[in-house]
Image (tube, rainbow, N blue to C red; front, side, top):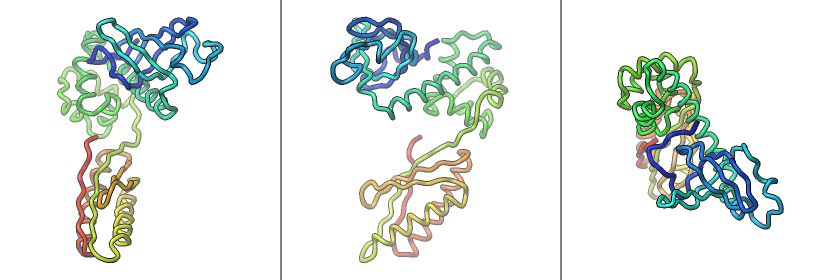
Length: 266
């Protein structure tokens, strides 16, 4: 069964998972599993760079492929896809997102049976609100392992749906490391500013590690840095970041600099 989306067609540049339905000399017809079960076309010149002697060396009927959308024509109902334009990293991400969406759908449809709801109603009343609030439905269900039914209520899910799906979460949803990010500003004027900044960033990571959270810092442009954090739960990350922010405000001020931390939208 296909994953349902609010939008009728995917955006150009989006990654999708599709099943090869039929191979022909000049390309392959596919069903887009991760986007409304739309039919799409994969031209032979979008399968690989260079001359392709036998299309069967790259695609087989029934096989699932991660593809990139290169053209959409709603007036003709056409979606053209590419295999050669999707990188290995993108392929992994697209597969992972599709797998998570299928897991969330499976749990939701079990709950739907108890409520007498259709697949379309399940998406409209449960899965789409969770996606809108948390980015994807499976991550939202993972949050309920930590936050309880409140995570569902915050997305506007009805009490009936909460009663039906919440008991299923602990049985069918696995906790994974969660992540968040923040934009950090550290500024020291005068001589030795670079070394002071390095030491401050090192101290920031030490505070996070003390709370069991992993931190990684990427340079943006002086005096800004991107901080990515991972932890066992959002509660753990919130506590670690709060403590780290308080520590850094005091430490940087004492050492003659200025500090700020701006949380990024998840």
